[in-house]
Amino acid sequence: MVHHLNRIRSYRDLKVWQKAHELVLEIYKVTEQLPSHEKYGLISQIRRSSVSVPLNIVEGRSRNSTKEYINFLYISRASCDELHYLLLLCKDLNYINIEVFEKLTVHSEEILKMLNGLIRSLKKQELNPNH
Image (cartoon, rainbow, N blue to C red; front, top):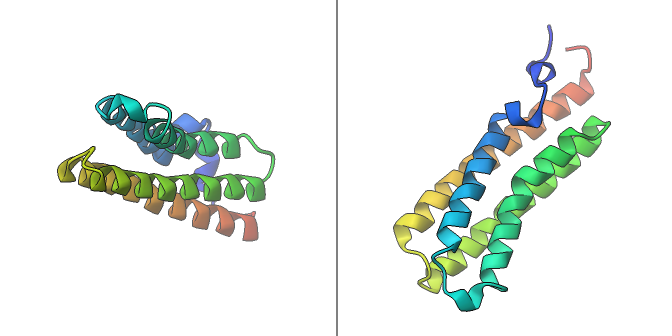
């Protein structure tokens, strides 16, 4: 049986990358509304952490080994967790309302679940390379 990951030709084919890219676009729109004095602080940090999620998926996918790919997915997952905290901080500072916070949090939690699934799948593939 050919593993479904072998049919993926590009990182753009990965649903998790697509979702992460959508989240980055949402984050950029939301951060445009934050106070301008946060431009080099919170805005910059939120954007960096959100971009890091799909970026590490891309970088991991381009690596020569499954182990390296998994390591980059762990970094992507950590960036997603970092983004969770930054969104909570924005909510607590009243920079974003509860609806925006919940929408972005749900989106990022979905990405976390997808990353966990991809990591599990790659680990299985690494253990059983013929399946």
